[in-house]
Length: 222
View (spheres, rainbow, N blue to C red):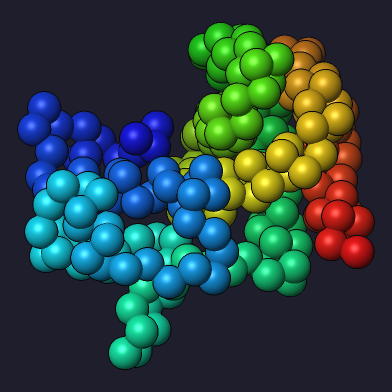
């Protein structure tokens, strides 16, 4: 199931709609369901092992979280992330994360607790070419930076980008696995800058870290 879900889903006995949500969302994140693909409710119900009603409830939630579009008379379609939207996502991330890094350094907080374990797990996933886990941990790393900035509004805005963040990360690392070592190195440079309370360096590394991805994806599309 997708990691780092809201606490409301962390139940001992999740509902059928929650199980459907988790199953379908992970399939979208890993690329089992391709961008633009229409999802068959009956087929989804069979694969999840439930009736169509929980699947419909899950699809409404997935629509609200921008995993899918609901097309009249055709059903749910996996959202296509356009080049323009991708650029806007990375621009938004840069604004939010830069603000968080600056605040962390100004208040001399150092790096978030647990970040070293996240990076170690991410590097292990990268070495194993487990790109979904790599992408999920990449999102966790960046989310931890924003949350460490202690601005709840920005953290909530950033969390809303999670599905698209992971989808783009999976796409990027799958199409450009040579970027893995660069990504890992830049993550550690950001952490080192936070520990040194060096906002300028932290933001500079973040900028090169995020601006490289849209440029890379545009190159792949040609």
